[in-house]
Image (cartoon, rainbow, N blue to C red; front, side, top):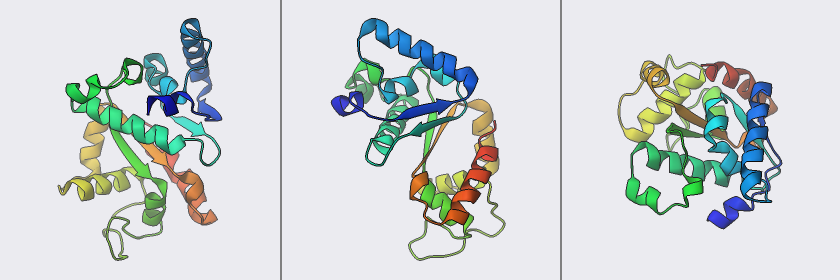
Amino acid sequence: MGQSLRKSTIDRIHAASSVQRTLSAANQKYDEHSNEQPSAYQILTNASFVSNSKRVVVEGAPGQGKSTITQFLCQVHRLNFLNRTFELGKLNPAYRPKVIALPLRVDIRDYATWLSGFDPFVVTEGPRPSGASDALESFLAWMVAQTTGSSFTADHLNVFFSQARLLIVLDGFDEVAEIEIREQDTNVVPSGTSS
């Protein structure tokens, strides 16, 4: 697994212009130890990069490993967040995040289903809960409630936002087929990630 992460061919990692300096510094830091460019994963776990980045876009063509890297990133953050030292000890130290974050990984197609007014977490197609909004926070809270079997609300999520670092990964944007829903995704997501 470490080999495939190192050989990643992600096209670009986009971040706010103030973060680009951090990204350049991360590249220089890794270049001192090796002639190779850092992998996307190494950049995404670099402490300086993470602490200076609120929103990051990983861009690449189909099959370049974007989903694989984000799945691995979320799994490692989950191990870190749960303090699973035995499992973390099996990882190459270069793959251990320096900043602890609670990962929430979203298949953007599920969010698109939500924006269409349906609940993506039921076996048979049904409407989303009454009173639920299009807001990303509303969707994330419902996703947590459905996957944990607990009553979890957007208010609970906001408490997490205020007291812990969250890693929210939205994966599969290019797989949302309906242009209208894709445009709605791009309009709603930035408002949900502003804090």
